[in-house]
Length: 156
Length: 423
Image (tube, one colour):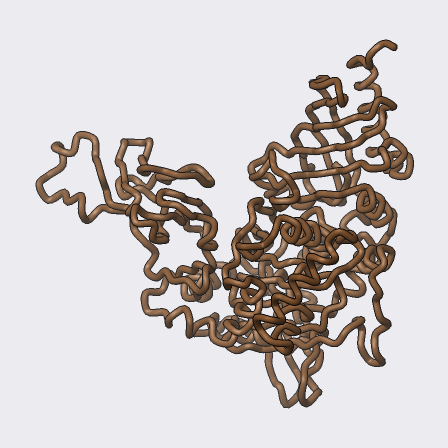
């Protein structure tokens, strides 16, 4: 069997980005493995373990699902009305084969109400299963602190 | 023309109103810097953030660049991070360890004790130039209470311990989580801005009236994970009994019977079966050490404590230290950390950090909605000239205990704030 190439990984990441930007969160959940994790480390500890350092987000699959349920609820006030987001993903690299690990850069522009645009800039670290499901997904923000970005209320 | 009153208080008439200008007006903001922030004890950091000689952290407190560090003898020191020559910030890293602090501009170098160690081309200065007089300056007052380090820009301020007053009882309850009485700041800082006046975060941090409406999705998350949430008793809005307490001098706290998970020590299914024996072990250690009554206070109550004016210690889903700096009338910078017992096991630490994220922080299941609420208030305050007053009278007609959903503790904050502003 031909190993998964960069093009296939890019297609996958672009599809994921399109689902998230469209707030098709249930369809996004289908891209995840049964034991998936989603993490956003604290800005001053970008290479840490959530068991020993405080993160911004450290979800196991149950909390990812709870996060989606929350975001679909109109009482999730921070995202009601919802942000509009548009993600640019580039510099996609396959960094390991067994398991399949991928890194990519992202810029997410976030618009909401009459608020100024917020630009979330950083890199993704993925571990993908051979069936191209997400086993782990980490979004590492480049800014020194969240600062003017405020919250991470949508899925990075 | 005299300045308009900012707080109207008439307890007999059950009247307490806050002038919305207090949250908007740039002139109030300017006066507040002088009359509140330059006279009160302000939180700098925790001694566990710097451990060895030469360790340092830089941060801003009340607009001042501050260096929190350990000197050559490992004593904790706080310096104003500004070169005595032209004013450059001498330490430009957020954290690290330094042998010396060298200002890169002209090369003046300070040692770990803050003494001016070397000046390039010193011979060109007149004979009166005295290196011994030109060390890094310290804030007028620095003191700490059980690891929490504070400064005060008023040389005549009362001692820290007496300033903290009855808040000490509630700080001690948090520290009793640790067998040795030592809590440490865990790595990882949540640092974010809120586009709102800082006093709105004071209110929000210990106003439990908003819980049911602002945080219904958090309650749903707990329920769906298997936590039993009782129906509120008649006349109440929350699932458990809780008090709001005025601790004097502007300090205040909630003091609530716990219904959520607590790392010390109430297990909920979110923590996982594997953590159950560990939480039982923690509870029995606390009980053996403190006795049943105090152990219950430590393990089965949640307390959100305001140390006037801008330090909040949250002891609920986890322990969080939260301090916030006003940047403008409608903007603040928040810094929040997780605090845990120094001797905690890796499993207990994992539960503590995971439990933190169920509620707190910019990616948590509740804090983002608080931030949304405060920013929505600030937008609404654009009409402060037409809609001038906010009532803060919950519980005012009642004798005896004040609930966490009443506003006695919020009135205590505003009363102290107004007193300082007027003096």
